[in-house]
Amino acid sequence: MRTQVAIIGAGPAGLLLGHILHRAGIGFEILEQRSSEHVLGRIRAGVLEQGSVDILRELGLDEDLDAHGLTHHGIYLQFEGERHHIDFPDLVDRTVTVYGQQALVRHLLRQHESLGSDIRFEAQDVTPHAIDTSSPYVTARYDGEEVRIDCDVVVGTDGYHGVCRPAIPGVRALERSYPYAWLGILADVTPSTDDLIYALHPDGFAMHSMRSLEVSRLYLQVDPDESIDDWSDARIWEALQTRLGTDGWTLHEGTITEKSITPMRSFVASTLQHGRLFLAGDAGHIVPPTGAKGLNSAIADVTLLGRGLAALYRGDESPLSDYSRAALARQWKVQQFSQWMTEMLHVHREVADEASRAFRYRSQVGQLQYTTGSRNAQAALAEQYAGLPF
Ligand code: RFL
Ligand code: PHB
Image (cartoon, rainbow, N blue to C red; front, side):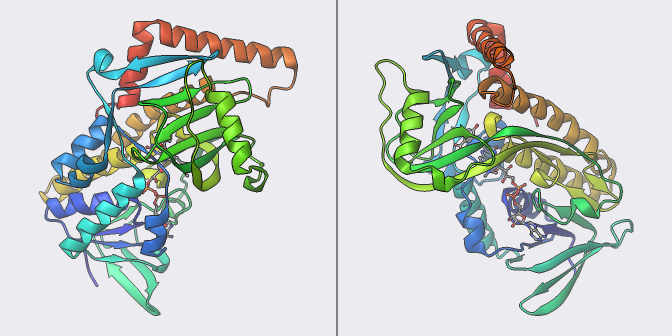
């Protein structure tokens, strides 16, 4: 078998890259190790930057987004029992859109079905080969048969645990982990807020997001070694009520339909390309979810990579050879923003002595007071949250 671009991984990065290549008239094939049901069942991210929305519009992939996406004009930062709004249109003339990754993946897949795209789910032992040469290929087992796909370029959109990054000789990991995790729930209840609430509370971080006008998404900071079995629904609501509570506001409770704990990590690969292999999305970098940047970074990467591949097939290799440098330059700005939001909003229980812990907490309150009190600081937050240019 032969194609122009072999894409490994059918998450949002791989599926969107397929659409970008289709638009450019470039042939592709996507190999995904999981079933389509599994891919469609993953919940994950919820916020799209304005630039991500613009890309989906340009590609004509905005029908479902327009029907179900919720335009948001900012976020709330809450601390010391008070809530402060950061107004994005006023500060930077931009908005963000709440639109679940699950809905995006469903729409991208449906559109691929109507194009008749070549996507192979449940492909086993997917392996890139000869990436140092101009004739790379990918092998896999599919429907009990060994397949070999010859191609011009291999793209690894196979997430953090994929096979493509380790295939790059000498690739290094620049990373840090955090001494906390997020317990996330989906609940059948109308959101109790118009914009997302990010709250620092002495018991830990809490957040109120949503998926629709009927479904709320909420998160709690927990210790990374905690078990979800120790968090009954009643205990979760009680913690959310305590951490998100403010005078005169009610958090409405509803049936919890999903709950899980996610560890938090910052990670960047030292390069996103080697020969004819390119990495995009979580395969190349991970952020803690506090800044809502993971999905958006995946969209930014494949946009850049798509432009590079289109130029390659017009006979100009230079944008593609600059891909890793350009994508990582943007990614490091996103990394520092995600780290900044994360450290400002979480309780640092790992700090051993009480005086240092109290100092840390009060300085975070000072940081939040400065951020909410200064128009310049608010604008810096708004500019980064609503998204840096692609
Ligand atoms: P994905 O989504 O992990 O997809 C990778 C795909 O590759 C497949 N795969 C393989 N296929 C073939 N062979 C192999 N050897 C393979 N190994 C893996 C996998 O099965 C999978 O289908 O990566 P992608 O496409 O780069 O997309 C990245 C995003 O999923 C991720 O960054 C976001 O979900 C992160 N994230 C958030 N990002 C945001 O922008 N805004 C948010 O609000 C936000 N919230 C979140 C998040 C992630 C979370 N979790 C659970 C990690 C909230 C949470 C709780
Ligand atoms: C979500 O809705 O899942 C979500 C929103 C904002 C974040 C993280 C997650 O920062």
